[in-house]
Image 1 (cartoon, rainbow, N blue to C red):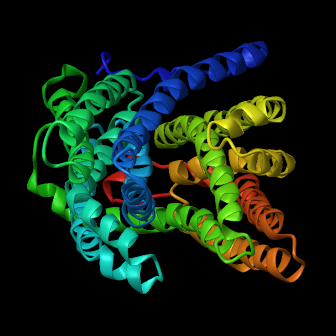
Image 2 (cartoon, one colour):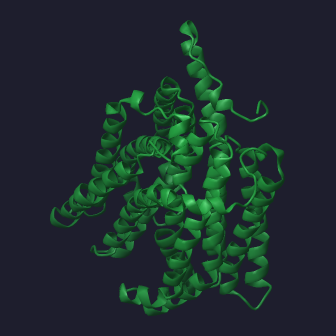
Image 3 (cartoon, rainbow, N blue to C red):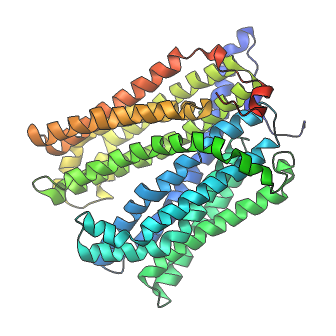
Length: 471
């Protein structure tokens, strides 16, 4: 067992070394976070590249692929990401408690859960044209989006399984293979999308098919690696029927985790829909969409630190090192604030350059510049809540985070956004101020939960893990 990789568990706090170890802690988390950032950006770009190739076929194809990609994210991809969050608690704490065999069992139970939900979502995707028309979308655009989504269905299963294996590796601090198995399929996707879209009769449908193939290639690469690598000789012992016993315990964490993630995704998408109801809706929608995409890109960077703190906390709680877990939270919060400030400064001084990548319109650039101060505030709160949400997954507080997101965004954030945007005529700025209120309440509530927790009661024993009693 000495060969097992446990770099995040090696630090021991000893007297005057505390400050040095804090630096060491930060270094470990940065080295862990960067590969996770690259991995998540690569998976995001696989579907984005498919949309880009489809968009070059014409305006209708661009509108259809964009709508399809947005609908796929809201109804499926975000759900798959959330469902896999259960493994951050189960595998993370199991690894810390040295119950290595259980990690493979947890992985299989999570894949079963993901498969069941993927079947249900695929039915929704198959009938998306009719659903989008009911939601008052342009019929021709809805038809193209529905066609795109039908050929994107295989990618849903691949993406869900990928997220499960990603958490399995993440909780063991095995991250470099994730980079290889995401960057290589991304490179393949560029050539494959070009080939299927422009060199075959598939055309528009070929873009969706290329994304599905690339994601399945990534899954196959990771599955082969896990099955044959000696790194997992203790955590993966092959397929076992024992995994069915853990499906329900997995769902008790997976469903709140999915709700937690989806509620936040839906809040951002709701802002775009509300922008479409304003006077000069085309300009307002473009502006809000630019802000949402900017926030999404910065959150991908934050998510790397969220993954690091989730792994660190769950590993240490499983090992019974409560003080180490607390210190990891403090270090990661500091790192996230520093990162947010760097991003904010870059945005303040380079907002015109960034806006140019979305639009050549001087009007849109000017409006985006006026939104930059509000965007800076939202990025700061979003960075903090991203890390605190990672703490929640590491500790098994998904249900608390889900209730927090529901209250923060749909009881406070969205009502304030509607009031300011439509009643007080602040329009796009009003929508974003409402979002800031939601993010502020979310971050503050999660911080209070973290600070008020009696960490001494968070410690898990090996016998607790064997009885499936989770924090």
